[in-house]
Length: 395
Image: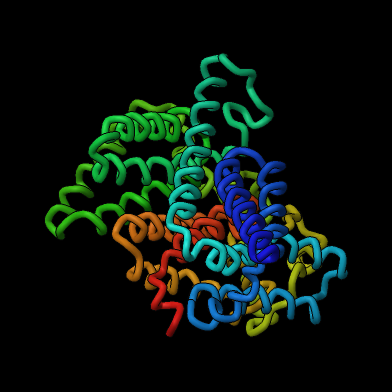
């Protein structure tokens, strides 16, 4: 009895640590690290590890996640990078362990799952309100401008908050007007205040997903037309949106390999360099953490700027783990989309948004490598896919 009671205490502590992690995930790197470590520690002490083999065997999302993490571990054996650097890169992918971990932790805890989801959205709202407070000089401006986090991260979470709020404003009856207000605040912050173009692009992907989820074919066509009109009006009224969009177009038009120092220009350099590195070792790549070493070798004597990642998770994984690693990551994202069919309606739509936001963001950023975005995807994946019916785990 004493052992069972102790396990329950640690299990409860792990759940609360997970909820706390979801809350601070959008706005605090230090608290994110603290609570995620506590989640692992309490999970280990709770005895839930014994469920891991069953979950990995019966849950395709957990299985593919473990295989991908195993590939990163195997990549240490043949990497061209020194071991210290390779381990530091591997550490960045630690969030992968949270997917099977949280599935075992929350699979019989619908209240815990709900609290995790709402804690994350509360964290996004805190991030948004702090941004407004800085914008109106109610709080001192942080080192990232009108945000507690880097502008790419901020805009990304504003896009997700807007998507979530849009769904809730339709489904909720008691709090519909509250969600409408949050939706409008998130959109104004995203397009009129936050300079992150990634969030703006992710929002467009999420709106297309929303139309597919909610509307018939004819309604989707009308919805696309209305979305185009709204974005056109936003472009004309928002200096932030129009200037950032115009700047991106200008950077693309003026691009010259090795000579561009713009955000888009340097990305194009790194993408082309990544393709060259992939061609050298297309099957299994250069090994975990090898990108920096191989890229420095490739650009030696040129004017191309060095970088520790190509700002595209797909290319980053392909350079390190080759086509095998890239195919596995894509298969994991696809499996998540397919497995959402087993979830309840609301969970299904929100989790599809998580996958689409991650997949779209990884085009121009290394989001699995990045702490906030990587933990967002891993934690929400673990939370939602722990909601499988019990009979699914008994197959």
